[in-house]
Image (cartoon, rainbow, N blue to C red; front, side):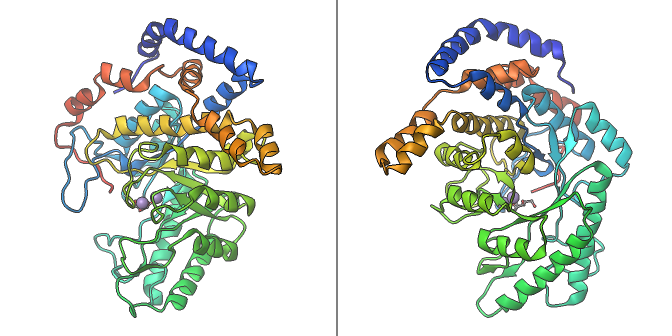
Length: 427
Ligand code: AFD
Ligand code: MN
Ligand code: MN
């Protein structure tokens, strides 16, 4: 299925009268505060968020999975799905592949297809948390940290293979999420496991092209429940520091214990030049992978506040960092959920772009706690939707992507094309 420019235009034409009024009144308010709405609209149009190939089907839990029909059954169909999202919002111009779930059989053809949808290939993801059919050694007791050098070699070789696929497609980064760890006290020698992981990561790093970066994820628990080898940002940063300049930390919002101050982690990593990328999602209890901004939009805003702290050139921050969603969909249509996530992320970005930095710095300098907090609240409580809508309309996206998705009955059409029981690979 394709969404055509005329369908978008027709939808936008209907939205225009109301939108123009809302935008005009917002623009005059912003100008009165000496904020240039044009600058914000331009920056919003530039900001792109990659869609993970594993989040296009129903994720489910270990208790059950409830498919919604029309799931993409091949890499080609996954690209088609992300293409639909990008046509609707012009903000999802990249796909992040997971190997071996998405091995391209014909790389040139896949690249050509992605091009047709204006999609680039974002970071490629390796998988050493599952055993694949025909695989020589098992990852039951770990992969890059395994006690047996043969298992470690197999896991390193897999990561190198992932890099090669990524090179052929034009990716520029490898994401390593290591599920290694232990389930019971005494099972693992923490120091040796971490050191073996460092060595394995160094071997992988040595195989990366010189314009690639490595993104090292951390996660406090799951699938191992007593310890994970890379449980937190400190351990990821430690490894990144040892492995090389282009090894960085990836912050997956769901990979923190409750109440962790993620924005402070972001600030420290930015200061060290080691923040490589994000996996956006939201959570209430753990790695719930809910729609970004659905539970704690204020935290998301504070993260963007830190991201844009020093830089008066957000474009530079945009291009330095990899922006991805990592979500799982149990009850919602993944495409609708992803549209909402992108909107949630861009809302937080727009609000952070509105912060009166001068007033904030002044308040901080004289320890005026109330005003410092108030400056942030003023930005966070601004309804930025007219700015987001305007940036979409200007880039050829739908004024209201979710409404148009429903109006065009996209899911119904995908079900009729692919069937009720087509199932996506992934989590
Ligand atoms: C799981 C992990 C992690 C990773 C993803 C893809 O928790 O977030 O990025 O799988 O490998 O969700
Ligand atoms: Mn992740
Ligand atoms: Mn996760």
